[in-house]
Length: 357
Ligand code: ADP
Image 1: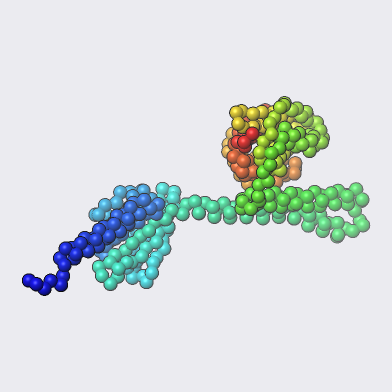
Image 2: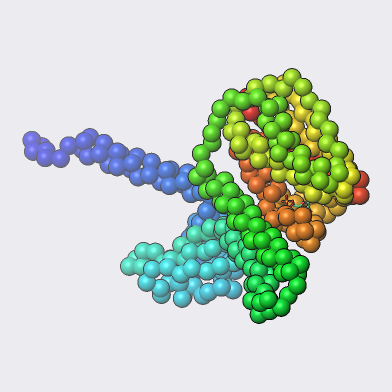
């Protein structure tokens, strides 16, 4: 018995260690699998489910068991044989309960028994964003083309009839050209503002400033326009606090809301600006007795280019972007918007800033 090259205790100890390590890895993998947001289903070579995670059941909207087959789940898209034969992976798509699912299917462990692994990825948000972007580009092109077409046709008429038109007519045509190029400038300016807000590229110029003084200055800048329409502009606020925020952006929010009240109230209307504090917050409200916003449109007016009445908005110099700028800029300050409207009687929009007072 004297020769004992192997130490049984040591050997078993090592084996146990290795087993423990394997077990650990397995647990890690199981946990990962269980909590993955992507769905995963593994099939044997013959197409039976050997493994799946809860996300897969949820995304495919059906129970999965070991008796579920590849054919039942994905047979409508591709055959198991085809997946087994691809060199790397196949990409398929499926819609389940209005969600777009992207499926990556790959054979695994080809040399041995092997099978097929399917990873399910929900791309609904991505698709929606792409769709929104496409729609946005189409809208921008359309909005810019309209004034461009007008500019071109009026300029053409002026050129073709050089000297033949009565001076009053000529002046009118030139006026249209000026107006339309102003409109294009407004659209481009608003688009730039939005894109800066979107990309998060524009820095915030945070500083302490007098909330009441900001409202005063916005009111001053709109006073003339309001008077031109015969509106009565009343203000009801006092002793407003100093707040911390980006004054330029907050004034833009106020100006756009107030500008709309002026635009969408028939001449000789009443516009009332109130403001105050609630606890740590400040708010401002603009109420008008204008045309109001129909219920069906209320949830949409903060969308880009959404307008209840295109012709009316265009006539008053609107771009359809004002309120989406308001929404974005308000978000920057954690501000909540509140809209009350009664078609034919008026609209009130309140902005509640959660800036530290
Ligand atoms: P616009 O440049 O067309 O004014 P906005 O984004 O500022 O674009 O507003 C979107 C739409 O919401 C307007 O076209 C208008 O139909 C409606 N709207 C906004 N404010 C008012 C208001 N105070 N009264 C009635 N309608 C309003």
